[in-house]
Image (tube, rainbow, N blue to C red; front, top):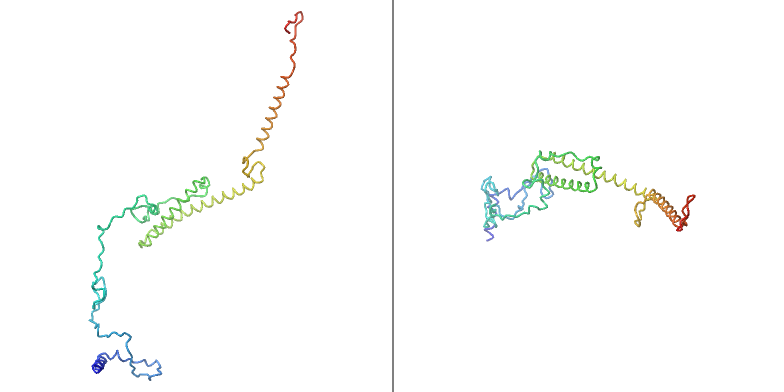
Amino acid sequence: MSTSTSVRLAIRRLLHPNRSARISPSFLPSLIAPPGSVTRCTPFSTTSPSSYPRDNNPDRGVSSMRRSGPRQPLSISKTALPKPVEVSKLPKVIVDENHGLWQFFHKRDKPMNTPTEDDAHGRPWTVEELRGKSWEDLHALWWVCCKERNIIATEAFERKRLEAGYGEAESKARDLAVRRTQRGIKQVLTERYYSWSDAEALAQKDPEIDLSGDGPLYTPSYFEDQASEELEELEEELEELQEVAQAPELAPETKPGEKPSPNA
């Protein structure tokens, strides 16, 4: 048995001399053998090279386009590949028409707007226009801008995922207009906050304003003076009426030649 193995190895070395011997380069010094000497080495793989001989086919390999595979059978060769399910056989997914995620898109039938649709937007609100709006209007406008920016960000993500290659400039211009409106809202609210702070500081020093919350918030001094004057006038009229009521009754005057009546 050992003789046949040694003979087999000798024949293999004769058929494949390059696999059993290597010639070291002359520019690498060697401490074991002088330059130019032949050294023996063992291949890295333990598998016999004759198990899978080459068939000189350049197209051999795993390729889905050429429908070719490895020449030797593998462990998964007996397993059939899964086939995709036809679209007509897939179950229908029922989606609520009023679902909240629909609000992240401008339209339901397409994932993003065209450049013409993105470019068709108005100018941002100016600070002068926003100063005349109430707190409720500014609050509502702020959240409308937030919703629009979410839609723009969603469509920008879809555009990048699909590698559309268009509409990026128009989308950025639309987003810039919305951000300018939000900046104007912040400026108006900041101005109102500063005005309110100044008014509160003045109210704390004003004697007509009571910020304690116990009584009326504002009591003008003009009304107090007017009320006191009206009260004094009423008191004077009341005193006059009382004096008239307490005065004694006088006899009526008689003309000369007339006799006073007995009832007088």
